[in-house]
Every structure is written in structure tokens, then in C-alpha cells.
Image (tube, rainbow, N blue to C red; front, side, top):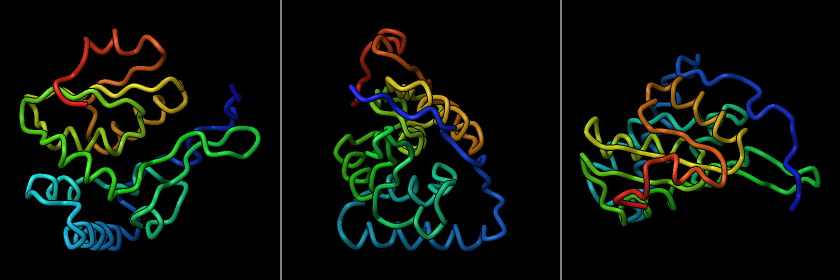
Length: 175
């Protein structure tokens, strides 16, 4: 198993009040429109989540344009340079959320925690739902915790380690 680099998990704190705040909202809407047109987003609730959650705040190491591209965003690298953690591509997240058919009050277990998908799931499950996100890398869960809090999506529970599922209160209703 290759060790993950110990460099800081996040070079700058997320900031949703960027000077290009209007640009970020426009980029978020444009991404959502493309996901709708391609058939990845099929329901109003998933559309609302994508229009609401600021993806750029979960990827401050890249430009807003890259944050709202329909592509993965590497967030952590192994010493040999291989990507060991990333924010998933929006098209994949939209497909997964549509397939899960999340509704208010649902319990969700997310394995592999980048934060953005947990925030989307929290939007879909609402205040009566529960989202638990787990990862085996402490730097990833620490990063996720900071980003969720900074964006006001701090309801999802975050856990780290191979025994994280037990700490999360058992399996979720949706994975």
C-alpha cells in the first residue's frame, strides 16, 4: 500500500464570497444545465441540489472554471504522484443521486468522502434525513469537515478509519 503524501490537504480555505461570486453562480448554473441536457439530472430535487451546493468551495485548489467542469478534481496525491483522492465528476454524482432516489428523511451512507457529494445528499434528504460520510484517510475527512462547515452543510456526520461504518450508526438506507 502506497503512503499518501503528508502535505496539507487544503492550501486555502473555501470561500463562497469570492470576487467572482456571480461567476461561480453562473458556472454552477451552466454545469447544471449541461447535466440536464445530457440526461444525468432528471428530477427537480437533484437539479435544485446542483444549483444550490457550491462545488468550487470543495475544490479551492483549482479555478472556478475547473471546479465547474464536468470532470474529476484531484485533491490528494501519493508520493509517486498518482492521484489518491478526488472530487468525482458531476455527471457521475448526478447519475448516482438520481439512481438512489433520495428523499427527505432518508438515511444515507457515503463511502469515500470528498464533501461535495455529502452536501448534495444533505440537500436531498433535508433536515429530517441523515448523511454519514466515511473515508479511511484522516486528511480527507478533515478536509471534508472543514468544507461542509464552511458551506453551511455541516449536518452530514464524518468518520475516518476502517471501523468508520460502526461509528456511523450502521448502514444507511441508501448507499
